[in-house]
Length: 428
Image 1: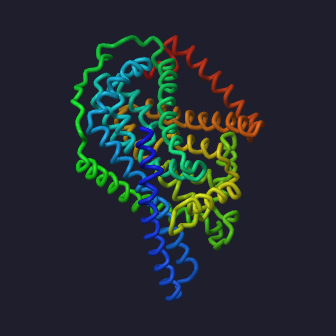
Image 2: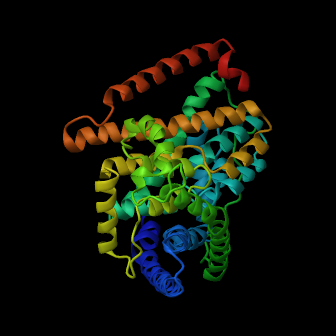
Image 3: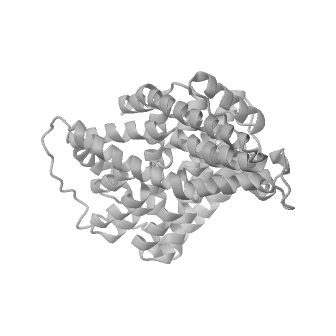
């Protein structure tokens, strides 16, 4: 898996990415010169160059990394490796009330949470199926890969192990969240009739690069369609809110924009995880529409330059922008990444959860739990990481401790209720 991430995120992926961004850079210059020659005006030029092309390029630039990753993951699946992973994971999944078969939806979730949630239909036991649906969105999907690639690529250039650690962290989060759910929903859970795993282990074989290639193209097509519709629309909306105030007068400084006024209260609530910028808060909010939009929004808000050669120079420029304008550090970047990865997925995936749960109570519980896990994970990473790196506590340390203590007290209270068959135990 480390080799897979190294090839996709450090070697081949960025190489292909450079050519794509070069092509988009040339197109952007050609369109910009054309608009200038016809005297289109600053507003129209800004809308097309910054709002549409800039945001779209920032997202499409990550497509090669995603395509290479999907290609290599399918090679692993085609070789017979993933079936053995399900078998190996069975003994561990049982500890949180799942079976090894739950690893299959979670693997599908590396591409998209929506088919992963739907793939849980193959699990016959209702409790296991609901828990699988609840925990699967914690796996970073293809929509979250641009966020991973941006933040880790900028602050940890060339460190493929950080991407691997991200997926390992997701597995840890799944187990911790699974244990919490078991304590609150099924405190007296016992082995059930379908707790064993029956799986056919195919012979190891040489995978088919041809099949992997076509699977890669299908997923890339779906990604481009999504990027060209809802994400493109959101980029235009972000550009509008960041370039105009409430009187609809154009502003040259984003600090005077409508978006700042809207996002500032959210940024205040997110200070315990190291978010000190309204721009970061705004991007995180838009991530609930589509996680890829986090990158597009950041590109529009902080005006990331689209260079012809995405190498260290561009990474350094972007890092400098985030550090100076957004007050972001390497620690807060990881905390912000965790918040975006482990909070609820896009609205479409939430809709899929509602359909598969067939229960409003379970859907509400899933959204609340994912919000809580994402926020608390980011909080712990930022506060402990800042203490280790700088020797002092991070921003809003006292409110962070209040949140941690309150969370512990609420957990103990709900656990006590569940032992009496009340509280969240009614969901079971």
